Length: 107
Ligand code: SF4
Image 1 (cartoon, rainbow, N blue to C red):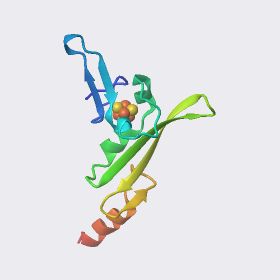
Image 2: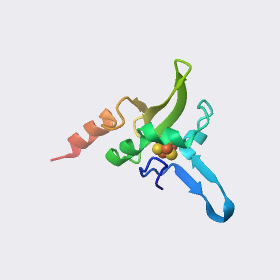
Image 3: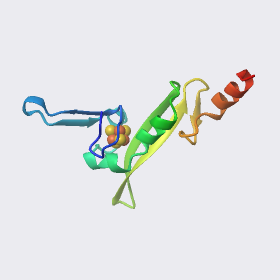
Image 4: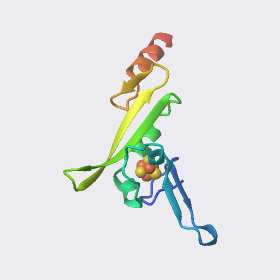
């Protein structure tokens, strides 16, 4: 679904039918440690780009909206690989162990 920032994101949901005014980020909803989502949080969110470039079904993302210096809101993304049960420091490039597995399989 297209976010208020104009990007496609599978975690965004909206419903304005029949007078409803629903807008949600379902990725943030799963994270109790996050500040509540606001539509403007989509503007600087790295999740759509991560999902465009890394299509691994083993990649899991956690999005935390937090305040920096008590004022600026930022979206912090943490990534995990379910296949190798490890954190992924660069979710755009993906899990290094998955890349190593692929290079061993390639002829
Ligand atoms: S905040 Fe990020 S993950 Fe959430 S709906 Fe917006 S673009 Fe998607």
